[in-house]
Amino acid sequence: MTGRLYLIPVPLGPGKSEAVLPPPVLARIRTLRHFVVEHAKSARAFLKDVDMPVPLQALGIRELNEHTRPAEVAALLAPLLAGHDLGLLSEAGCPAVADPGAALVAEAQARSLQVVPLIGPSALLLALMASGLNGQRFAFHGYLPAKEEARRQAIRQLEKESRQHHETQIFIETPYRNKALFTTLLAQGQPTTRLCLATDLTLASESIRTLTLAEWRRQPPPDIERRPTVFLLLA
Figure (tube, rainbow, N blue to C red):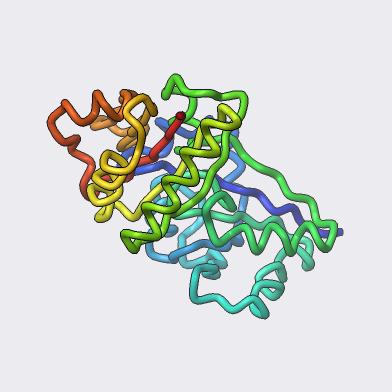
């Protein structure tokens, strides 16, 4: 008998987990004793918040992040192979989506182990739902290039694909570079292209607004610097 790999969503920002995670998900988390996480410190804070019934010191917590070598991933499945259920945590939102945990899920699938996704907040889907843009056809591109010319080229290409296929283009940025990305979008995009900025999703400071680029150019600059933001574009 092998265990099951549970994919555990995490709140998108400060606040009680019970505000965004359903009771059955919280109950399932409390049954687990083994976890693979992106960063142990923040994972322990989350597990403390969900009121684990055992001391945190009694939990098995292993890290999987950008420093983990591909050859090390398989060993993280050891609890499953020993018959224990295992929880995979992202830093925020859903595991394995724009998240290094995807490598663990791929390894589990390759071994025909059971993978169970749990319900919780997904910044990408919440942003798409509220954007008013095309939810029938969309693509997520992760992070755009940081260098200005490469970023301009990427935006031109995304806008072209969006126009050709009537496809919503979704991307994110490191929060401290949000302003630079927004400035490039205003300078590069066509006036009629619609842009949604979905900021601080599920938090008290949440802001979701969709305007054409021409309309954004007439607005005061949005307050998105150092605030998690999802960008959605439809030409």
